[in-house]
Amino acid sequence: MSQVTFRGTPITVLGHFPQVGDKAPDFNLTSTELTPISLADFAGKKLVLSIFPSIDTGVCAQSVRAFNSKIASMDNAYVLAISADLPFAAGRFCELEGIKNVQHASVFRSPTFAKDYGVAIVDGPIAGLTSRAVICIDEQQNVVYSELVSETANEPNYDAALAVFTQQ
Image 1 (cartoon, one colour):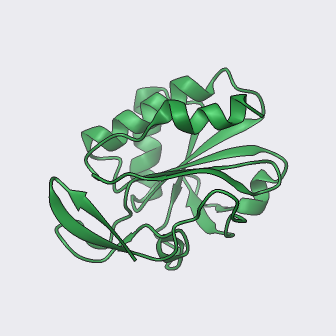
Image 2: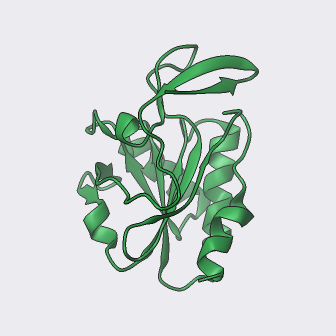
Image 3: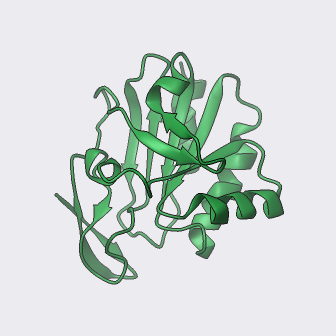
């Protein structure tokens, strides 16, 4: 269990948040095409999990835009933007914004993802959504960076997250 804030109000987040050196837990999420997405789909690749409450908020939308532009020049690196949004809403956002370097994945069919990744918000005004976090996974599916953003309304540290891939 962790505690973060949402606009200054403490909220409880359940589950084990992966730490550097951990093996990334497997997951089964849903793509904007309604097909399954799992960790195995990214074997041998660098993967950034950008987890957030909803694409329909300014900070969440900005994080998708930021990762879209920052990951474009990196080889063998992918960003998976994960939220509780329905795949249709996320797909519409990515199409309207011209997002090409980030793939959205929804937790709506995955009741265990939020707890498995330690981002399950269980109280407060956004209970049931996922907390803002960034987890970077290397080609061997080891966690090489993790940030549970302490204030959900703040953006993550993009540069620190992506630096782990440029230093390898």
